[in-house]
Image (tube, rainbow, N blue to C red; front, side, top):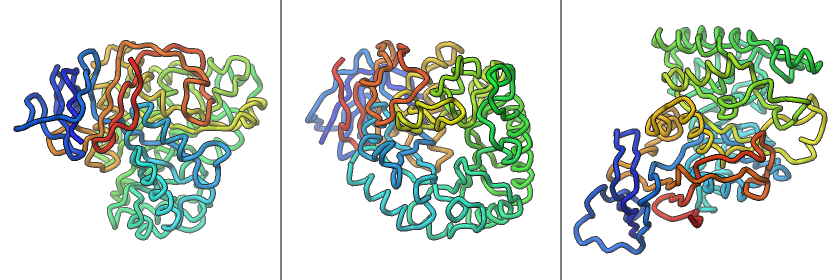
Length: 426
């Protein structure tokens, strides 16, 4: 199918493109930009004259809840949510049930995702068997099955000797390792940031040093092994400073921030709002400001949705007992645009944080619209507002702290491999 996306504002951060022009797609690839190919006769023309055309968004952390947690969400529902949010590629953490620690599970997930013919799914394999922190997985077999990296998700990994051996193994074969920096003992039992709000509400707290101590250990292990480590879900002012110093020391590290942490802080917990029960916890206003600044100056490489749909029963509990997580696949674009507008970040730089930068960190060839690239495209109206409501979210999980908020940035079309997989009226 030949598709002409006519006269939109084409923003391709990877190639420094930001201009009004047309995009031509044929055989699932980008055929040309600006001038049509010779003998061009499109099957469909999309008028994008008031819209932004960019590479399909790439989400570095989205829990699809399969296998094992289908009562929270299904692959079908979350793939629909992804393309509705302009997300054409996503990485899914290994904390399923059972965890992604065997090649058969990874192959099954990829096969299921391919059969839906929507967003591309890139599994992140379990670093240890069963995520129990006792034995390293067969990383080679998992990599052959389709894992793009290895992680321990949010499960505690207190055994630093085992972690060292896992990183040595990964470094030997060039595998990427993703680690969430949190000391297992300092964070044990905690549900909120160690600050005034937790004290006032009587909530068990997680101090900022739980993150910085873990970061210090991770960076020392990176120095010892040379492995490429991606730090997942940075949350503190001190953590941003540690990552900045590690990059200045030329360590092979990258990092991300969850989109919620750019806009919310511990004050938003209010009177025990379980929608704000997240991992890592919402931190102070000072931490939030540091995360926003770190994202703007490139210390933080990318933004992820940290999508984690939770069923209503698990959220309608006292704060400390509620299951952590929030649905966010459909909010990744508008919340990123909101950050960019508030902090006066140019649109191409903002879109880079959810397209070309995650592609680089994940080792993907997508995330750009160069000639010959796979035609994964997001077309959105940057000025269209929509209200975040349970009925407007396609994800099976309706849990988000942003319910009731009006956000700018409405996806009109999503293309995956040159096929229109999502379309909504203007």
